[in-house]
Length: 287
Image (cartoon, rainbow, N blue to C red; front, side, top):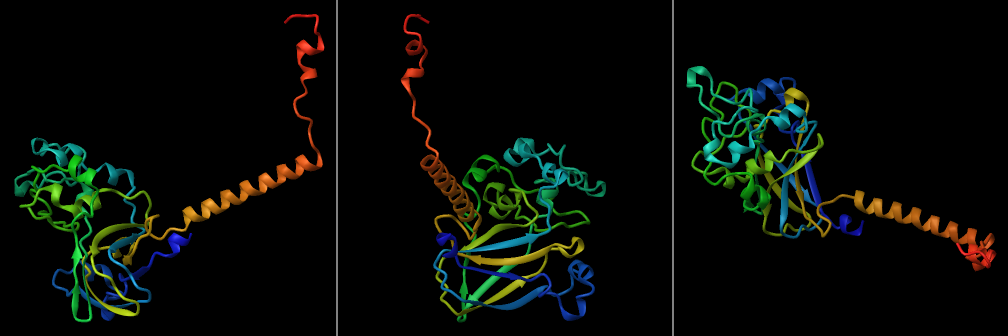
């Protein structure tokens, strides 16, 4: 509990804050309008000092990445090997480009990649940029074992319906860490994913200027978006569950131990008496 309480978190929900006043009742049309200005400038005040590294997360609420059809909408063979780029059997409807565009396989295929988060953040303080390092944000095992170094994006987000972020076709999937983080689907409808790391301290009561590109469409299905700045402790991020579980189970165990001790003192049971053994009760009979 102490370690969890030592973690400093600064969450900021911005899906409603970043809507223009005249578009609050028309959010879906606004987010789909490619000509609308989606830049949002906000100010955050950090109440407690945040020691580097400061982790930057995006949080989505009411987004069901654990839906069965969504989870299955990918092809792991295609992600691993260039030779399997035509393996799109489980990726419908994001498997091939439309017929008028040649009916070519999409790499990476499937709804998970297609719906990749595409809001962007820039932070600054005291007129200096807080550089967000986006290296080493994905699991090394995912980079090495699940995403091929010879697999490059092809025909991605070229149809009429654009889902989310676009990918650089000159960078292999094994180096596209934003994609790798997003493709590790969450088990619950409220989740955080790592956006990057700030390698400098943020002092207490420091004002942080936040520039958000509000691109991702969560308005159509009632989801919520937040940015979270957080430090870590030896237990990870702020999460009181583990501490509460230890205290609860430890308390129950202590009460049971005291109860059994009192029971033994008040109504003691005799310890094992060898006279009750069969060969002592009937010494003349061998058993």
